[in-house]
Length: 506
Image (tube, rainbow, N blue to C red; front, side):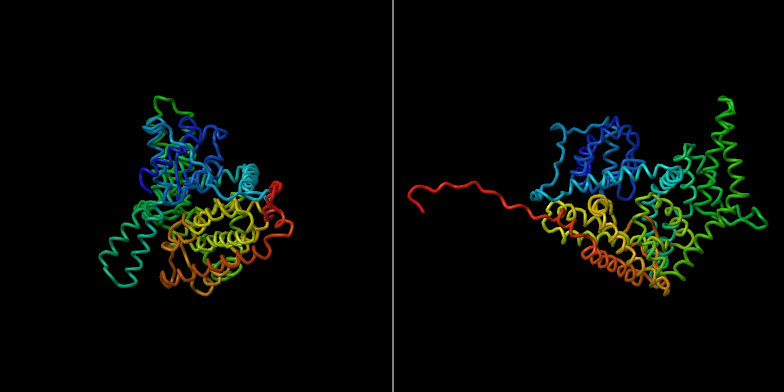
């Protein structure tokens, strides 16, 4: 998308979220613009959802606008420019007009429309937010916030690493392979520092102090340090150790600031934080986190090697409910740990099958509700995004409000996950070298023991299985007769006024 189009989208979004004065923070992940808002009641949700560039919204710890991977970075940059300029959402010709909702043929008089489903989905989402307002789930969301800003770099480095691996397997351009390996590995070698920085920032500490304490973990000189009867290894503990070290640094910083006079704060607080946080990382956290990280790697390997079918079925089938409960946030550090240890995460391709079940389910809903033009129009607009792994428009706009189709979508995800899991049990495990993308967008990031082509074949087979099973389960079991009567009622025939016969005619 060009800068002009990105700016137009940003200018259209700004007044619909309450204007510049209502925005407290701006960030983005792979597909979503994440806004910290002072007052969410100022958001015009209906008008925002009607913008052609907006694929959906998620009201979570931040207000999230789904724009898709091709647009989100550009729109975010343009929105930041508008905010820096004082929220200028006007052009030389005056205010940017609010986009209107795309028109479709009129829905039936008796059948619920897409707007009705969206309202029901919003109520379900609001109820989920209330249920998720527990200390554990809030902590999981905050931990996820540490890793979300790292996803673009993980994706870029993952694709470069995959390219280097493909060239190495072919025996081509060894000098270029070495260069690409350096490019892809530079960020990964310092990942602990970035995690520490973001952790301190998220939990209220000084970011650079969190990065400094976490940086101890990747320093090559730790190999000379002995703890628990053994010499440490640079990087031991990985992102888990970095997360724990930075959390400790935040607490040390707060404690020190409370007791140190303001005149000494600039000298004492950073020194105490780095000294005691670094020593704790060396003589405790690195060892403990290293054991935890190793256990995660062994568990994932064992799970696929011995229970691929069952593990794939459970993971693929329950991922959408995990998203609803907010528990999927806990998987991000696990993915990152596996990528650090093994070069890829074998869990992500299985979890991506939940989106395949959703796509197959939506296609079946489209065919079953042939008289409901409103819902069919929503599916047509949301399906391309669903194929690329952006599932929110289909989840909250179609399957979840309908009820039974959400369950049959999970059945499709379970079937796709079982397919990928069985392949892993047979020695053809498929991993992803980065987190973030899903659906078709995950193909460039696949890795496996038999090369990219074999990994793509297994992953593609899983997607196809998820599509087919999700479609069949929904088509035959996703609707009761009462549901079809409610949602697929044919449009009533128009009542024409009686015409008086004209004199002289029969």
